Length: 264
Image (tube, rainbow, N blue to C red):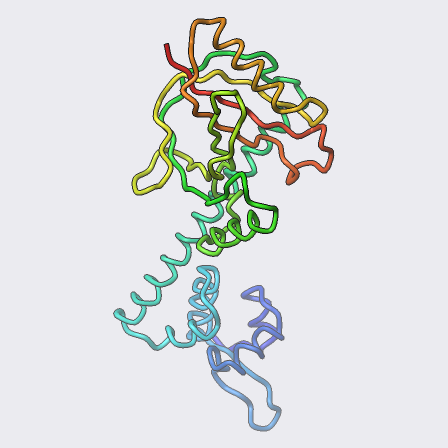
């Protein structure tokens, strides 16, 4: 088989510019060039080579890597494939975490459309949770808070709010005032070697919707309900950001779920 460049391009579904580019990169030279006319011809070996190039390109290899692999032995090919496999696994994990964030956000927005919120206090038993501590305290001004967030963010491959469930760890004082202990970045499921551990327990849960009503009023309603049900608070509470400014610029759409730990 000997085909002119146009025929060869048509056979393999590639453009003439692609074949010229492959020639210039040294990964697919014409089998023969007519010295009189300059016409380029390709043969069976050229087809085998292009088939391999297309396969490697589909696997995500660069043209430089393909050029190196075309004349490589098994050990070199294995090393390149191991490298690509590792990179692909990292990308898949990043994509999985982004998809998890998108689905979590979609569920929250669907709940908003359905009006399916916890508008009255209810007692819920919640399994153990873990997370990372972001060192932010009540006394911090806005600059110090963002400085702490940015310091934590530097260690992460994706934005903290994508990777984790954003939350606030709260201490309820004797006079029922709420004090911010730290920000929490809750993990998808319990893991080892984390600074934040929230044991399994009973919580009074209620969603605080919008900004028209003070958060303090929602806490008072929760604490009153716990007392009426014969429970006392442990002093520990958690605020989960369900719909935040990432999802809506309208403050009346914002939702945080308040969870106050209780015991008999």
